View 1: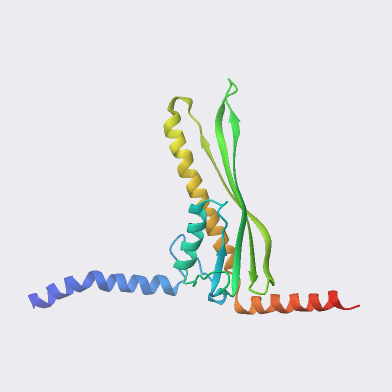
View 2: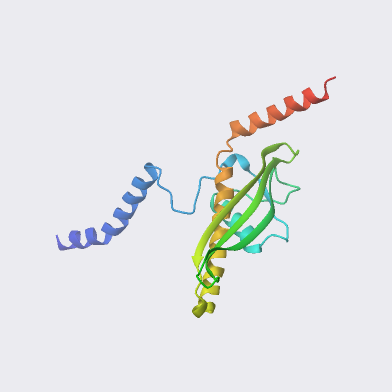
Length: 192
């Protein structure tokens, strides 16, 4: 009997873990930061030029890979995600009585497009943005600079998540409908 009790103790943690995973997966629970990336977008190329922050581009690629998307070069991919016009803006959002900045607003924006290898647009050029405010303290400038840098990195990660969320609705049916619609509009434009 003591042997059965010790075996039960050993198996309790893995058993509880497995039951929790089954329960959470069954109810649609997902870890924060992950999103359902549609498998219909495979293989996918990420066109992220050197002018964009490398951390941001890598964050987008990492999240796609975590979502199970196979990434390829644009020449071999069926779909291309184009990222352009990454901008970082910092402006005072509150001012002290001495006319010094008391609070700053950080805002990051990027333009995304998604199209097929044949240049059929699936997502037209769309601007995404993320913003955050933080208090500025003139007596603690170094700490505030570190905080600002951390916020910039977080904003880049949030923007990368927004890119992934924009891809989420792209099911096979939507892709085929967009291709048919594009073909129909091209045929109409070419008719006299």
